[in-house]
Image 1 (cartoon, rainbow over the protein chains, first blue to last red):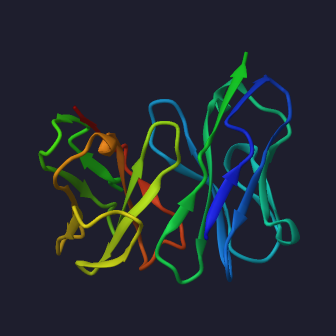
Image 2: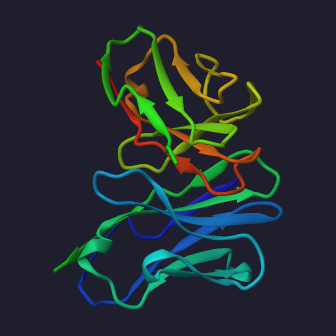
Length: 113
Length: 114
């Protein structure tokens, strides 16, 4: 069955700490991968995406993610978090040519000022 | 550029009632998808509409139905409401058929079933 798993439900970091959020997917065939973010009081928005090519993708606000096919992983990273990164982060996957995107359960990140 | 808008933002219904949620897609987007997000979970795919037809469906019963109109706006209808239908309902539009690209989300309609 198609699924997306996020390793941590809640993460608390101090400003300037490094961030890595884990994501694993289970999918048959070619898959497109995404990280979405929901800041407090705002709608879900795309942070970054991977379709093909360079497995290290860069998104907005200094975030990056690495696609490791052998591990079925697409982890999100940021070298130094800011208080404004406090949000909920969702990993998501969609099969190429398909019609649905499957989301993980989300990780709530709280950054202490 | 007008983003995805949803209405109403909040509503309360009782078990057994019916509800209609509305969504206006982002300008230039012809595909609309609906998601259910229960508390503490990620969005779950309900169905997608393209060219006014259901293009794909998730694991939701037939009492969840939808429509897409010629202007690409959409409705989600839920009949015979159950307590477990309490959730945030998200509408997402995209500029191409299928949802393999970026989804543009509205702020959602929060439904409470008592």
